[in-house]
Length: 291
Image 1 (cartoon, rainbow, N blue to C red):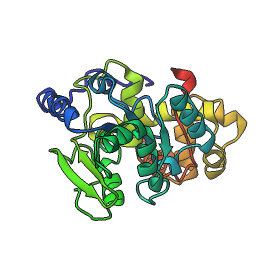
Image 2 (cartoon, rainbow, N blue to C red):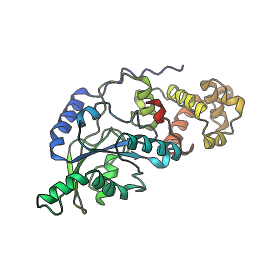
Image 3 (cartoon, one colour):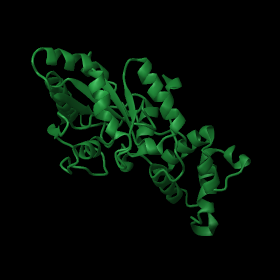
Image 4 (cartoon, rainbow, N blue to C red):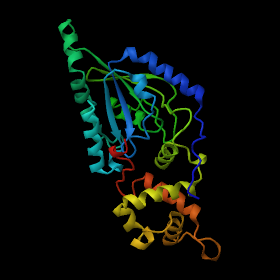
C-alpha cells in the first residue's frame, strides 16, 4: 500500500529537449537567471539539469509559495543558498509578498556588471534576467506581478507556458519567461511524490489513496499542529499505520461508505486538496539537511 510507482512517469522528452535548447540558446542574451522553486520542496522542485545548463551565469533563487511553507525552514533555505553565494528570496506570487525585493537583490548580484557597463559609457544599463523553473511553480504569476500587467498566461495546472516571452519592467529590467522544464523521467521516487503532493504532477497519474498515505507518512514525522488539531488526532492515532490513519480522518469528516466503512479515496482527495490550499498549516516537506 505504501509504494507509489512514480519512477516510470514520462514527461514528453521531445518537448523538454526543445525547452533545454531554448534555455541554452537564450543564456547568451541575459545577464542572470532567476530560478523559481516551491518553498515547501526546494529540492524536488528544482530541475537537476538547470544548474548544469546555467553554468557560471549569476543566479538568484526565488522561494515561491512561502506563505504555505514553515517560516523557520524557509529561513534555513535562504541561509543555505547564501552560504553558496546564491542570493535567495522568500516570495508569494499570489499575494505579492517579497517580490519588491527582486529588482534590488538582482541589481546587487550584478553590481560589478552594472559598474563595468557604466564605465563603458552606458549610464543606465538594462538588466536582462531569464526566469526558469518547473511547471506550475509560479513563473507566470511572478511575471504578472512584477510587470504589473496580466500578460503572461496563467493557469492552475502544470505545463501551460509553451514558448519564451520577453517582458519589460519599468525599472530598466527585461525578463525572459521560459516554458516549465521537468526532466523526462523521475529516477527518484521521493521527488515524484513530493511534486505530486504540491500539484506539480497531474493527479490522474498517481493513485490518490497511495499519495495521501505517503503524505501522512511525512506528517507523522513533522507533526504539524494545525493538521493534528484540524482532525482531532491523538498521540496513539499518530502512531497508526498511515492507511489506518487515513481511515480515521475519513470518519472524522463523516466520509463513509456501506456498513460505516471509511471512504478512504474521498478522504485522500480531501487531504491533498487541503494541504495544497495550506489549510493544514504552513508545512515544509524538505530542509537543507537532506542535501
